Every structure is written in structure tokens, then in C-alpha cells.
Image 1 (cartoon, rainbow, N blue to C red):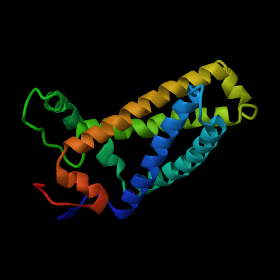
Image 2 (cartoon, rainbow, N blue to C red; image 1 turned 90 degrees about the vertical axis):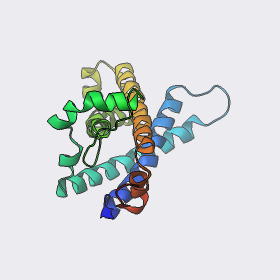
Image 3 (cartoon, one colour; image 1 turned 30 degrees about the vertical axis):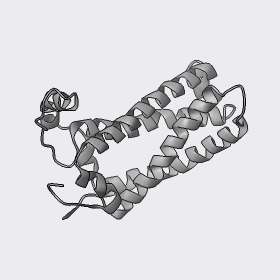
Image 4 (cartoon, rainbow, N blue to C red; image 1 turned 45 degrees about the vertical axis):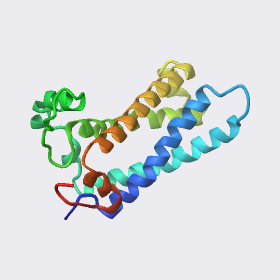
Length: 190
């Protein structure tokens, strides 16, 4: 057995994951609320609370990751990119041969690299909409509130797609690796 995910990493994962899903779902709800039922006010409050908690949790997670130099494991490297065609063929069921990667495959690395970069775009936009008078100048430079809303909407759709991709890649890898996000340990060959 080897330690695959430390306890703090698992705690961060299982606190940030539901917050990210809450942000995506409430954000989409706020963008296009149904005409009947539901409270837009409640959705906004939940969204704002999830956003504040997610921001704090993400900063703490990134700090923890930099302390442990985890960024070296999640950035796609040259040898990962060389395996990209074989990985795509395997994921698209064109071959049964699964390419070997270290801790994370190239798809996971792209997603894990995308998330902090997306957060650098999406989180400030969310704060702009939260306090538009305070952030009037950056909103004006971005082309107005409607442009900010559109950028945030597209960022939300991309985030939703990568969350789905993350779940897919986690469920289609080995059972042992999937269990490790709960237990921390991974036994090779499971």
C-alpha cells in the first residue's frame, strides 16, 4: 500500500467539490431562473456563501499544494503530451491498451491545470457582480455588466464540463485509485 492522497488533500477535495458543484448549479439557476417556483434570493445567497467559502478553501488548497510542491505532479509534461494520442485512443475505446502515467494521466493533468487558471478569471468576475459599484472601473474596462455576466457564464459552462470530465476520468480508472480519494491509500493492481 502506498499513500496516494494525504488527509489534508482529501479534506480539501471533499470540501471544495460540493462547493464547486453548488457554484455551478446556483450560477446556472441565477442566470436562467424558472418562471415558477424557487427563490432567486435564496439561490443568490447560497451562491455568494459557496463562493466565499470556495475562495477561501481554494487559496488554502493552493498554499498547501505549493508547500508540498504538488504542482510538479499536475502540470502536463513533455512525456505526457507524447502519450496524448494513445490516451485519447484509449478513452475513445479505439484501443484496449491503457497508457501508463505516474500519479495522474494527461487528461487529469489538463483539468487540474485548468481549474486554478479558470479560478483566476471566474472568481474576480463573480466579485465584480457581487459588488458592481465597488468594481465599476474593471467592469467598464471589460465592456459592462452584460459582458461580465457572459464571461462568467462561459466560465461556468467550462467548469461544469471539466467537473464532468474529472468524474468520468476518476470512474474509468482503477477501482484502487478511486478508493484512494476516500482512504488515502492505493494498492497497486486494484
